[in-house]
Image (cartoon, rainbow, N blue to C red; front, top):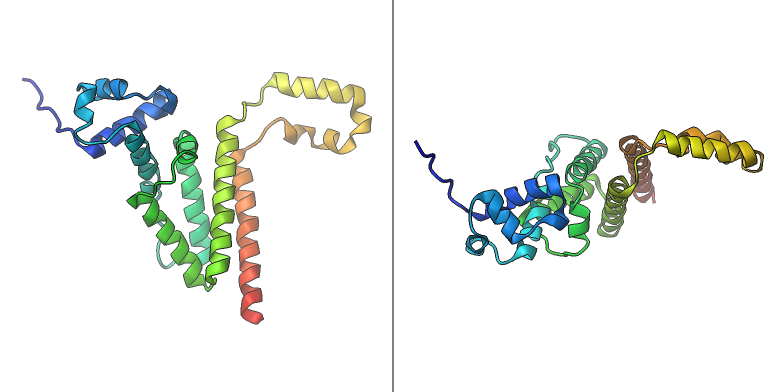
Length: 215
């Protein structure tokens, strides 16, 4: 018995586009290929989305909508850390988000919900509007920066390690600090490094808040 066809709608198109980009890269995404994934002609997609750019906007919004929001009863530092870590998890799962976000300033509902929660955490903690803005920019730069590094950095190999060790064997006495840090320089655990930087940011914000309250 033939299975009933699932009705086509915007949400289904966006979800299919996300799955395709995860598997093949966003550069390979086209209306024709997306239609084939959904079992329809490309022209059928235009009944639900305006164009490929509209799909890209929906994909970005899908990623931000997928970030779980922290519980209201958490301390602001814990809530901030949880939200920022969850965002990085989404960037890691959908590394194409960065390239799409860099070419689109559109804010969908999902991104607005995310921003509203982040801003409310900072405001409720006692940060004024100016420091809230600074914190938002700093957290965003940290997340996007590490996500970009993670998406573009080549995987370290034994060959990389051997090359560095061979070079240092010849000139290492001129670069003692590089020699000492060599085991760390040939590999990077981005999850650990991101968490380390996030802790520093949060501690800095905590100190800033305490200073503003005592001033």
